[in-house]
Length: 78
Image (tube, rainbow, N blue to C red; front, side):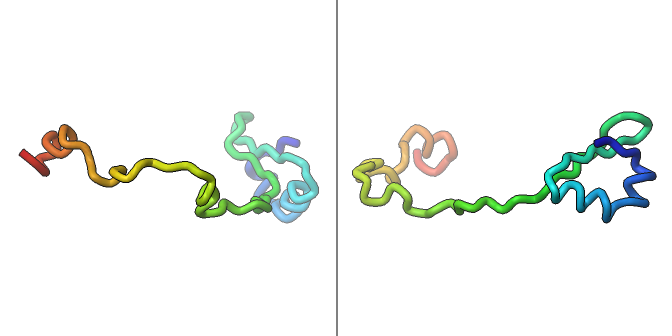
């Protein structure tokens, strides 16, 4: 559904209800789309830290040792 900005201001509650019901609402100004009103959904599966812990992946023992060329480039080492 498309509504102009003036109408959207007057009918915001109704438009929010429609978007919560799954309808996409496009708000226009001078006939051009400027905003989209859609239902906000929370991700039901949150990101888990340590997901691959114990899965056998390794970045190696020296992952945090750094790179001599990069250190020289940034003036951390001669």
